[in-house]
Image (cartoon, rainbow, N blue to C red):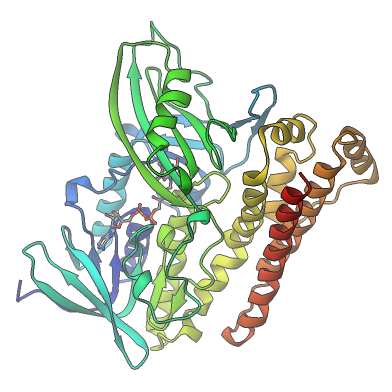
Length: 464
Ligand SMILES: Cc1cc2nc3c(=O)[nH]c(=O)nc-3n(C[C@H](O)[C@H](O)[C@H](O)COP(=O)(O)OP(=O)(O)OC[C@H]3O[C@@H](n4cnc5c(N)ncnc54)[C@H](O)[C@@H]3O)c2cc1C
């Protein structure tokens, strides 16, 4: 491999949904792009996933919606159930309506479109190992090629889209980029794609993805039941990381046995994975370097959906890379625009949902049944606060809530406090500093909100 090109405008590591989107939009601009992927080419896209993606992202990026072999089925929205299954909140919004995809076919399409857009060098079966630094700038990446040879590849901009276990995030020297994702901010998942005869079992609610909150059956996470077609479903479970080693057992007992009522099944695919469920990294950029998707914790903390945000981030990272190269400046000051775009858009939503996630994880099934059944925090409110950062409850709404929650004033107060903090954090993110020098003060304000929510949870535990 001595003759391969070793110097690029942009190198993208990871050919998942985030990396292929970034590579595609940089290549489309005519820049010199290299895409590196650890997997063999024909396995790209074959990821353990719930396979659900909203339709909005395809319009935003002006790319084809999933169709033909890529598309398993259309989805109208999401149904969220309380633990006792008595309350079901139906969510219709552009991010919930969309598709269940065939993940391999979808991934292969995104890869092919990136290559067709003009990626100069695509290296599959190639592992990124380390960042290359010079004078405090990332200037490329050390990789191990298919033949075992280790080489250095140089870039003006390096984009890391290598997923949750990113080896590069751990090597960054920038103090604003967290090297580790805390266990408490991650969810462990196990899922299967199960095929059965439609004569023996019907797919429930075939036009909705179903999510069941249950702290006993899926502690710290949830159970999902997603349709794929008339004879197969993608079902799974997410739990907090402390159940490492037990998640498959939980799945068998609390998901498979409860939702699959026939013995005559084919397991098309099975496996586990980890999803980061927190707000994005403090910073997703440094000199010459940006992180995209799971590598940057850009996943919806409430439901773990990361396909859409990884593609949005890939697009923003591509634009920031193009701009930086045009301006011949790859410093953090130049790339800060990428942080700004992320934090003021879905970052604001995810920070707000992160607070909700932390509080939900601390609630018991009784709390969840009570709060959801009486609409103390409704689906519409969650969507409104998290997407707009606003929620103006009328005095009548407040009074109705107070009346409904009268037998659980503690829970009502906690949820009101949460509502206020969700609005505050969303506003703070929407006002993300557009200059690096203002970042430390902003960060302190965010930490303060998290501390208050965590203190509320500790006090609640103490009072029990
Ligand atoms: C069980 C489960 C269910 C999920 N369900 C959904 C869902 O229904 N909807 C949804 O939107 N999201 C879902 N997610 C999350 C979603 O899959 C991810 O958020 C999304 O795929 C992130 O894309 P990415 O491009 O950042 O990373 P990835 O898709 O993980 O891609 C990273 C790529 O980098 C490659 N790579 C890794 N290390 C290296 C290296 N050192 N060198 C070179 N290449 C490397 C990997 O092989 C991979 O191809 C789920 C996740 C899990 C685990």
